[in-house]
Amino acid sequence: MSELCLEPAHRLMDLLRTRQVSALALLEMYVVRFERLNPALNAVVATNLDAARARARAADAALARGETWGPLHGLPMTIKDTLEVAGMPTTAGAPALKDHRPKQNAPAVQRLLDAGAIVFGKTNVPLYGGDVQSFNKVYGTTHNPWNLERTPGGSSGGAAAALAAGLTPLELGSDIGGSIRTPAHFCGVYGHKPSYGIVPARGHIPGPPGTVSEADLSVVGPLARSAEDLALALSIVAGPIAPAANGWRLELPAPRPASLREYRVHAWLDDPACPVDAAVKPVLEQALEKLRQRGCQVTTGAPPGFALDELYALYFALLGAVFSGGLPEKVYRRAQLAGTVAAWFGRNRVNTLPGFLGHATLSHRVWLRLNEQRERLRLKFETLFQACDVLLMPVTRTTAPPHTQDGEVYSRLLTVNGRAEPYATQFNWIAPATVAGLPATSAPVGRAADGLPVGLQIVGACLHDRTTIDFARQLAGLTGGFSPPP
Figure 1 (spheres, one colour):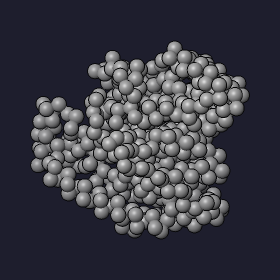
Figure 2 (figure 1 turned 90 degrees about the vertical axis):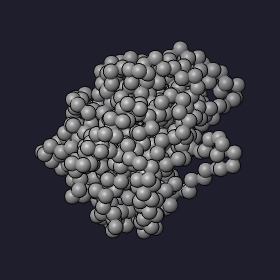
Figure 3 (figure 1 turned 180 degrees about the vertical axis):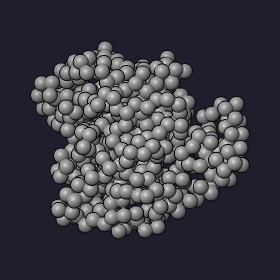
């Protein structure tokens, strides 16, 4: 029965509904696997097994009476440690929050519980979710189950590693810098960054615990071992919260085409501004060739009127601005001075700490101008998606890199095609979908020559989340979808 731990969530739900397996038995399978594999991975960093077992028994008893709590009735799962779960640690990897125990669930977490899920663990993240790796002083380093010397990514790195290793069937993560898409790519699982604003992000750290407003650019979304599970989870967590829920309703459009061959595909798989590593590009091109063979209409190259470096520069500026509100006054003033001095000497470039600090302290006047650029960009994308249904892009430049924990993000280096490149260029390819608030699904499409997974980023028009997830579902028929690490 232990092989059930690697089954997708929707298949497990079929077994639970038909009582071929009990919620308690399924939970215990995951506990046994967690105890065996997690010490080497350090993916699941906190558990509440007594409460989970009690809820599993209640789920079984309810089903025996003919009652159902919802579409996830009795399903064990884990939650990223930046999302608040009542009674469990929510540290965001920060020593200052190591004792933080929320009194209520984040709204998206509550929706999963209301649908019948059983949350038994929290998964590891970097400090305040701010890295392309997952390590911190509270819980230590999470390792990639494909190669323990490699990172599983960040900030939902523990989530992706746990899914790939069969420690959980479903996860809820968050994404502002590829934090769902990059770990999914590095670990060979599925992840979906929703259209901005459709899943409530309240209860996410950062901001500080208790923050009611939701950050610009940042979204909450699911990770899973199949595209079908992404669709299931999104249908549960998406929708407005009060007071908007008093009148607004969310109705996401159905997938655009019915069959894979009907999809109009535009592929932007490489760019001189941010070349993709030779280990990754052939795997993406093979997936594209399989789409052509299936009969898809495929066009390639940078879409007319779009420049990756310009898209990234706009994203970088708005990303810096997101962090200004949470900075203590003294830190903010120092950042303001550092950014000003950097601008005087022309050192406020993208992918540098001075450049980031400069944007973290920009004026509201400047932010309004950047926001106007963004709104114009959103209209350009709307026009682009009149000519195609999905835009295919790399997730990052490389497969999962080795653990690199020295210094801060902007001082590290990344090896791409044998050359040392700025570590932060891992954000470049996720920037377009993030800055424009578009849905983007990361789907595994194969393995590189080094044996590590490669994911493809599927971007769609605003609110066409069901299209990008459906394309990922159908693409699995060509590329094989998820396969467990050896």
